[in-house]
Length: 427
Ligand SMILES: NC(=O)C1=CN([C@@H]2O[C@H](COP(=O)(O)OP(=O)(O)OC[C@H]3O[C@@H](n4cnc5c(N)ncnc54)[C@H](O)[C@@H]3O)[C@@H](O)[C@H]2O)C=CC1
Ligand SMILES: O=C(O)[C@H]1O[C@H](OP(=O)(O)OP(=O)(O)OC[C@H]2O[C@@H](n3ccc(=O)[nH]c3=O)[C@H](O)[C@@H]2O)[C@H](O)[C@@H](O)[C@@H]1O
Image (cartoon, rainbow, N blue to C red; front, side):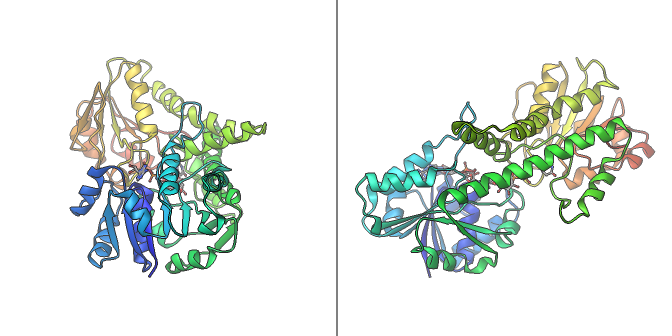
């Protein structure tokens, strides 16, 4: 049984800890936020992720998973340290590496025996080489440590599926020394293992997220053209997706991509490129298309409601996508803020989150949220929204406009119930 310390009890730290314990390792997950650790030690999970609570509980009961806020002690007592702290965006778009710096300082000041330090956080190209150099600069002999870059590819809301059925496990190393242990660590993972340099692994992570974002902006641009020619975008996506060279994944058009990773990783990659004087025309265009999706949908709404001032608009879904409680960089919130700017009275409903935003009214009942509304906007594609009782919706609204900003409704069904359906590239 390999003993491992996972630093950070956020999305990635918790799911990775649970998975590594499930693979048969003994995991201690640590966080500086004592309240998080207290919750976890009481059997409560600080994030919403389907199935995660049960997996954590099972492994805690089997004695393979522990939680602590004594970071230094855990680092001392484990020879493998996996870093899963946040790398949020700075105002200029580059990555804020202060959490990484802090934990590296802690490791360097604590190290007494051989450690494998694995960076799972998403960090800009060159960061793991820099961590390696810090160890050397602090006088730590090369025989005492190995730095490994092991980026994570899970999606929120699908984290357990992704972590148990990964498309790939990527390891960037400087020497072959840690490879045997790394293979053992993920023995239960059954995925292609890709070995490369430290910076190579960092680039695989950024290139993956940039490609996914590119597919989404491509889909959104094609959907705009479809809209202009009255073509059903979903037929086009189906036609594209059956070509295995293209694939159907990440071709869903709508409000655009949000969340804590695609926007920040794209900006960070752009920043890294610029630092080396590399032009990023494609990445710039991907961001530009994404940034204009909210305006596009508002223009659509304006075709039936030219003046939003004083109108009651209900938004269903406030998180950045379904099956999560994560509000970070949510396109829905950006849309809500725009609606408020235009003087609309905004009401919201979300299956998980009670939105606390000034000038909005959050409801606990999906149908109550639309009473006397002029328009309803579907901002995330929760299954329960797609299966709504549209006759009930019609009877409660004052005007009958449904703006499907995630292409998840059947326009025909909406119309049959006496409502007006609006979409981009969708009839
Ligand atoms: N959220 C996601 O779905 C994915 C995130 N990533 C990357 O993984 C990294 C972590 O992301 P999240 O889990 O979303 O972040 P998060 O912000 O949810 O969690 C980070 C945790 O680290 C803790 N922390 C910070 N400094 C610490 C220290 N010195 N000692 C102990 N704990 C410390 C924080 O208190 C926090 O609980 C980021 O680089 C992100 O880009 C990669 C793939 C998926
Ligand atoms: O680095 C990360 O943190 C992660 O970022 C994304 O995962 P995540 O942000 O959880 O969510 P996605 O499912 O990728 O969705 C991101 C955004 O794109 C939007 N999206 C997604 C797919 C699509 O076809 N169209 C579309 O607009 C979603 O609504 C959401 O706002 C990647 O999918 C993960 O592989 C990666 O590990």
